[in-house]
View 1 (spheres, helix red, strand yellow):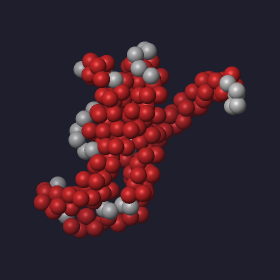
View 2 (cartoon, one colour; view 1 turned 90 degrees about the vertical axis):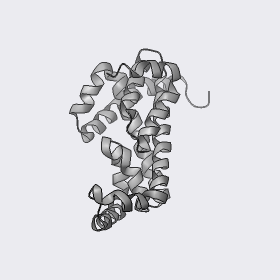
View 3 (cartoon, rainbow, N blue to C red; view 1 turned 135 degrees about the horizontal axis):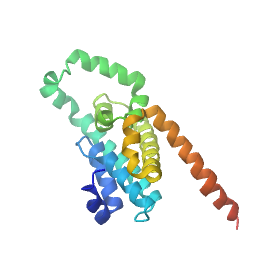
View 4 (cartoon, rainbow, N blue to C red; view 1 turned 45 degrees about the vertical axis):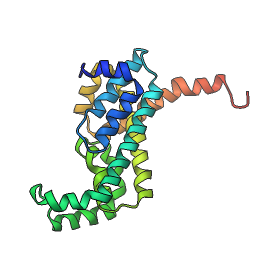
Length: 201
């Protein structure tokens, strides 16, 4: 699973995770998801802390998407006006897309984090279509945190088999799997820890 990433992650740690995911989220092709999974595998071997891997991934996702949103809001329409006709983005289709974002922008931004193509461009499209920033930030943050938790736990739990699992499962199945892993973590780690250290002690 992309062994060329290992030296980079070993050297730069959490910064590498945040940068890789931030670059991908800003719309530049980069193996951000794979970097997260590999870092989570390293956490399982004791080289990194899983909590910091997930936090770095979520931070990179949110910051990168905000950069993509800003770029789309301020420069997106000019870019589409120049090159849109070459990729099928006619004015008529832009109007349809704007209506779609008006009604389904929240879901698109949240779920876009779970699909490779949308992950890179959902924020840019949200900016182009003037999705209110407050709504964008909320659903983008929820999606980024949920995605980081899901893929972080998959990499941590399944190791070298994580990539096969991610490839063969749909996003809905991944969400169910993530919920199950979070429940297991709560039951076997967080709840016993709270019982040993009750609030107020």
